[in-house]
Every structure is written in structure tokens, then in C-alpha cells.
Amino acid sequence: MFTPFGTKGVAPQVRGDGMTPDSMPTSPHIGIYRWRITMTLSILHRLAGIVLYSGALGLVYWLVSLSLGPGAFATAGWFFHLWIGQALLCLWSLAFFYHLLNGVRHLLWDTGRGFDKPIHAERGALTYRVSGWMIVVGALLLTALAWIFGWLILGGAL
Amino acid sequence: MNYRSPLSLARGRGSAHNGTAHWLAQRLTALALIPLGLAAAVLFFWVMRTGYYEVIALMHRPWVLLFAVLLVGVVFWHGYLGLRVVIEDYMPPGRAFVFVTLAKFLSIALALLGIIAALMVGFGSL
Image 1 (cartoon, rainbow over the protein chains, first blue to last red):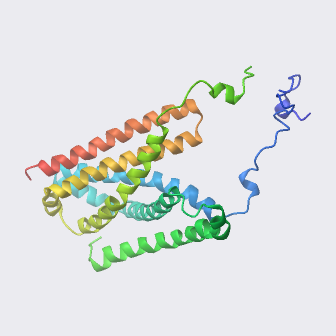
Image 2: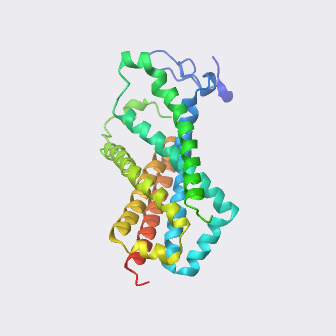
Image 3: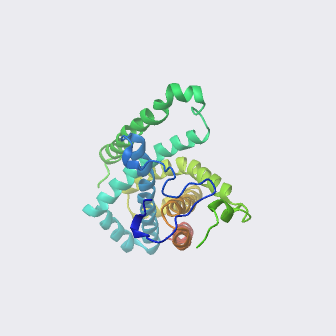
């Protein structure tokens, strides 16, 4: 009997089916699977969500500064013009477009589309991996387009 | 030592009864945030190249004020639900309860702060 962490003298728990916890089949750990884009995108969706929560903090700070008067508003403007403020705005915009696109994909999944067995066997890759890569490219493209349009064409004095 | 199986521990406790409401609210707020978020992105670039008094004048428009209040409210509602899912997935139940409560208080406080600030600007005399 394999006894982890030196649990000598402790009788192994025998369940009704005669299996002990040590001999029970467990699902393989993540390390055993081949890397797929879907794994990264799933965790990135949550990460982007947390990043966007900090962005909401920035929005509240900006609104409060607006309510406090021109001085406080100018301070907020000064902060968002610093390299740290600019980096935050870039990060938030990327997280926004990624979370938006992947969120729409999640909403489509919630309708159950493409999950019927015959369709899934035929187009599973389209449902998960191809759409995943489309979202990566789409988020980068939309972020770049938004900044190019907002910054250069609108002539924002950032 | 506890010899009861996980199933017998869960049995008799009944359903939490409100899981579906959270699930649905997360998706409905997500849907609402598609137009609200896109409008915020457009306004962001407009605001970036204008000054204080132009922004104040814009916030005096009823529809813009309504938009700002809705945006802040829905953002923190959706944000709280999202944080809650992440906390419950990665933390043991006892600690998860503490952090979910903290996330709830933080989200309500921040949403109210943002809404109050927006209303002060919108109803302000400046």
C-alpha cells in the first residue's frame, strides 16, 4: 500500500466499492495534455476581466476628478499622460477588446450552437480553436485600429 | 475523522436556490456591456482631445448622464459577478466567503462613488 506523507499506522479508508483513495482513478493533471490555444484563452478571459476591474477603478477615479473641479481633472489628465498611465490605457484597451470578443463567443456557446454531436465531431475545431485564433488576431487588430483612429485621425493630443 | 461521503454531506442541505440568477445576471450584464462598452470606447477618444469644460457640458446632457450612471453600475455588477466566480473557483469555501464579501462591498462602494460623482457633475452648476 502506497502511503503518502508517511501516514504509517493509519488504516487506509476502504470505501463501499473496495477501492482506497490511493487506488481510485483520478483525472490526468493539466501537464499531460498537449497545449491548445483554448487553454490559454480560457485563463486569459479571467485575467482580462480582472484587469478590466482595475480599469473600472480608473474610470471612477476619472469621474471623481471631474466632479472635484478643473484642478483635480488636470491631475488625472497628468497621470494618464505619464508612461504608467499610457501603459495602463493600452493594457485596458487590449483587455477590453479581448474580453469583449471572447465574451461574445461565450454568449454564443451559451445558446448551445455547434454543440450537437454530429456538428461537433465535424466542426469542433472551428467551434474552439479557429474561433480562438480569430479572437486573438481580432483583439490585437481592434486595439491597434482604435488607437490609430483615435490617436492619429482624430488628432488626439495624447 | 469524518466517514461520510461527499454526497451524504451535501444531501439534505437543499439547493442554494440563487445560482441561476447569478448565471443569468452575468450574461445579461455582459449583453448590456456590449453597446455600453463600445460607446465608452468612442467617448474615451473624444474626451482625450477635449478640455474640462467641454466634458462638463457633455455630462449635463440627460442621455450622456444616464449612460455614465448605467455604465458604472453595470460594469461593477458584472465585475463583482466575475470576481466572485474566480474567487469561488480558486479558494477554499471559508476563505472564498471572506473574499466574495470583500468583493461585494468594494464593488458596491466603487459603483456608488462613480455614480455619485457622475450625478454631481450632471446636476452641478459648472
